[in-house]
Structure formats: C-alpha cells, structure tokens
Image 1 (cartoon, rainbow, N blue to C red):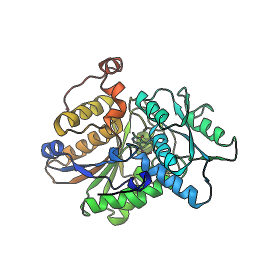
Image 2 (spheres, rainbow, N blue to C red):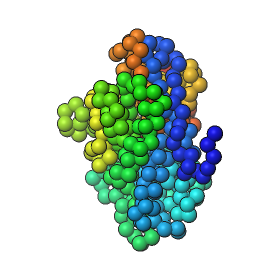
Image 3 (cartoon, rainbow, N blue to C red):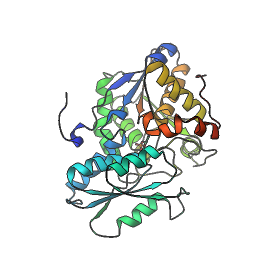
Amino acid sequence: MRTGYISEIVGQTPLIKIKSLSEMTGCEIFGKAELLNPGGSVKDRAALGIINEAEEQGLLKIGDTIVEGTAGNTGIGLATIAAQRGYRCLIVMPNNQAQEKYDALNALGVDLLTVPPCPFSNENHFYHTAKRLATEGNDRFWANQFENTANFRIHYKTTGPELWEQAEGKIDAFISAVGTGGTIAGVSRFLKEKNSLIKVRMVDPFGSGLYSYIKTGQIAATGSSITEGIGIMRLTANFKEAIVDEAVQVSDQDMLSMLYHLAEKDGLLVGTSAALNVFASYQYAIEHKNSGKRILTILCDSGLRYQSKIFNPEFLKEKGLTRKPLT
Ligand code: PMP
C-alpha cells in the first residue's frame, strides 16, 4: 500500500480488465483506472507534471497563484496539489460543464470564473481569458496545459511505463480521445519506442476537428457532443507530439450505451470520455474478433462527476439520447 502526500499518490493506477467486453469479443480490453487518482481524473498527472517542472524552473513560490483555463479536471488536479504545497488557484471554465466539477472546485477553495462557451478564435474563450488573467500580477503562473509540454512529458514518464509494465509488454493497441493531447502523446511515444507495431487509434467525439485532421489533414467538424474535457479545433503543442496511426469518431449515443453497459455489466461507473474510449476499444476488438489482441485504453474519470447530466433522464431526453443496449 502506498502512503504519502496527495502529490505522491498521483498515478500508479490499476489496470482493469473489462470482463464483459473481453468475453464478447475474444480480445482482451483493459482500462487504466485514472478515475482513482486523488483528484478523480487523468488530469492529476498533467497538473503534477506542470507544477513540478515550474517549481524546478523557479517559476512558483509559496503564496503564488496558479491560473488555468480548463473544462474542470485540470483545475481540480491543480487545486488538490496547490492546497498541499501552499499555492492559490484561479480557474477559468466554460459555463456549460457538469455542476459537480464547479462544486468540487468551490470546495477546494479556488477562485472560479466561468465564461460562456465560444469558438477558440473569440478572445473571451476560457483559454485566452486565463492567459490574460495570468499576466495581471507577477505572483501568477499560467499552467497552460494545452501548450506546456510538461503535460505530455509526465505521461511519457509515468502513464506509458505503467501500462507497459502492467501489460507485461504484450500490447496490440492503445486507444485514446484527446483534450490537450497530453495523454495520447506521452503514451503513444513511450509505447511506440518499446514496440513500433503497437497501433495507436485516436477516438474523437462529434464537434471535434481532429478526426478530420487525421483523415484528411484539414481540421473540420460536424455536430456536437455532451462529452466533456475532450475534442478540440486546433493542434496543440502536446498533440503535435503524438504518434497516431488512425482515427475514429464515436457518437454520443454509442458512448452512452457503453457508459450504461459498463455500469450494469462490469460495475464500472465511468465518465463520458472514458465511455467513448471504451466504445472505440470495443469497436477495435470487434474488427479483430477472437484474435486475443490486447487493447488498452484510459478510464479518464468517474461517472459520478457527471451524475447531474448522464443519470438525469430529463437531460438525456433533451439531448435526444436514450439508455439502450450496445449494438
Ligand atoms: N477525459 C477527460 C474527462 C478530461 O478532462 C480530459 C482532459 N481535458 C481528457 C479526457 C483528455 O486528456 P488529455 O488532455 O491528456 O488529452
């Protein structure tokens, strides 16, 4: 059992074999349980990597304020570590995210600013707002998870090696969605260095431009998605480090069917991006039915972080989504 401060127990998460889907496909599907990090998501790793590198470079001193624009999880990750190390946090978020994330950030004592969602080109986008606020005072540090490559480096140093070790070097495919690109970049780089035959498949929700980018070289999107923390319309410094072989797009309905399937059949309550990741892994397994291939993905956060949305029949109805079995 591990003992230590919050920042010392980030990572080293279990790799869960998803029994129902492995049996259904004759492959082995595993999810890395990032929802078990202290802040409840994969973004605890990025937060720790960014803070550690900033400290090493002398960019942070006790009492300073860490400023970040985030869909929520990076803010929660930063706030848990900041509370322990004596920093303050100023978090800027779009105002259409799950209430649970705002509640968690308020409980963690951060200064929270919400802004209306808007295209990246608009100067009021949460990213630009955070960047601007970070320049107002020399006791502020902008975490900048999208462009700060400390993000992908921590996944290269921790998530990749953990997966390699946990899977005992037998890995056929790695499948991941993209928010900043930190996870897919760090893991794909590490795994490809170990074995260049490992396939890396990116999964995108509708409304994100990366699927089109991988397919055609042009960033373009159609539709929208209720998933949170993933999907972007630009290439980030972190995503540019990723080695991606192929891309798929998964609908919210397939994501939701998987989310409920995992809850009911496997006792796994995961969030929307994790359900998207697992659906794409299941699709990959169906394409390689009964091959015994080992497919790894990321369980980014918990379904409980979105209960006001995904366990709320009114919300689902409004979005035209229903709880129906996997197809
Ligand atoms: N899932 C969730 C729930 C997230 O919050 C994020 C990060 N915003 C991701 C997936 C994507 O991770 P990354 O930023 O490493 O691409």
